[in-house]
Image 1 (cartoon, rainbow, N blue to C red):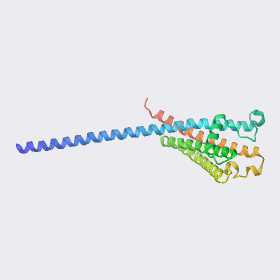
Image 2: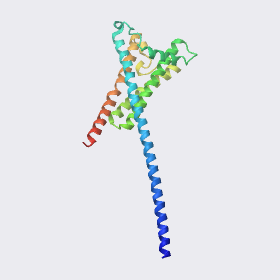
Image 3: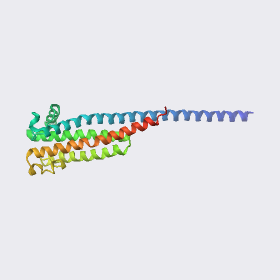
Image 4: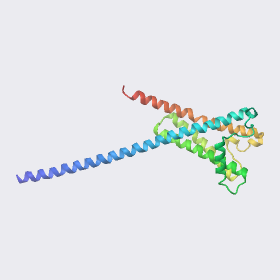
Length: 221
C-alpha cells in the first residue's frame, strides 16, 4: 500500500511538473506571438507611410515635369530652371546650410542632392517593408527599380560633394551641360526622375491589389 502511495505521489509530482512546463511554454508562445504581431504591425505601418510619402514625392516631380513642358507659358519659371515647391525649397536651403564652408550655389546643389537621397531612401524602405508583408513578384520589381533609382541618387550626391558636379544617368554622366543649353540639361534630369518616380508605383499597386483580392477570396463567406 505504501508503495502505491509513493508511486502516486511521484506521478502527481511529474504531472504537476509537466503541467507547469506546459503553461510556461504556452505563456512563452503567447508572448512570442504578441511580439510577432507587434513587429508585423510596425512593418505594415512603415509600408503604408512609405507609400503615402511617395504619393507626395511623385506629385512634386510630376508638377516639376509639367512646369518644364510648359516653360515660359507656365508664368512660373522657364525651362532653364527646375521648379520646386516653396516648402521643398526651404528644406533644400536648410540642408544646404549644413555645408557652412560652401558658397550659396554649392549649398543649394548639395541641399537638393541630399534631400533627394533622403526621399528615395524613405520610399525604398517603404517598398522593402511592403515586400515583407506582400511577397509579390510585382512588389519585388518595384523594389528593384527603386533600388536602381537610389543608386543614381547616391552617385549624384557623392559626385556633387567630391567633384563639385552631380554625375549620373540623369545628367548624361555630367555631359548634359556640354551637349546642349541649360534648359536641355534641366529637361534631361527632370524627365528622368519623373519617369523613375512613376515606374515603381504601378508595380507596387498591382502587387498590393492582387494580395488584397486573394485575401478577400480566401475568406469563407
